[in-house]
Image (cartoon, rainbow, N blue to C red; front, side, top):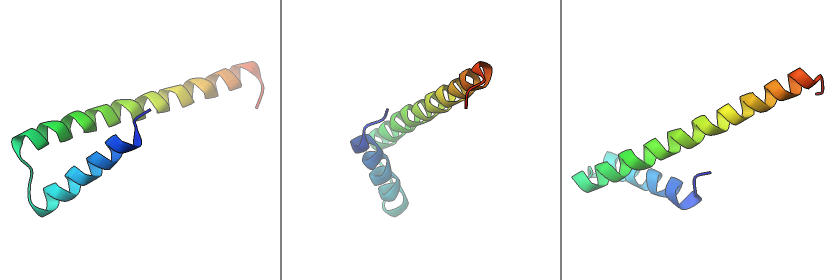
Amino acid sequence: MMKEEKIKRINELWKKQKKDGLTEQEKKEQKKLREEYIKDVKQKVKTQIENQKNISSSGNK
């Protein structure tokens, strides 16, 4: 699970990008954080789907 501080940083960089633009280093940081966030979301979705399959196959709700 992605830490709240990293999510806040993603939002800070987004706001700065819209207002002032980002340095190359900030762009790299933003890309890395976004990739990490997307990976985390994909893992959560995968886990939820697997849990649904397990519930369905066992006949329980």
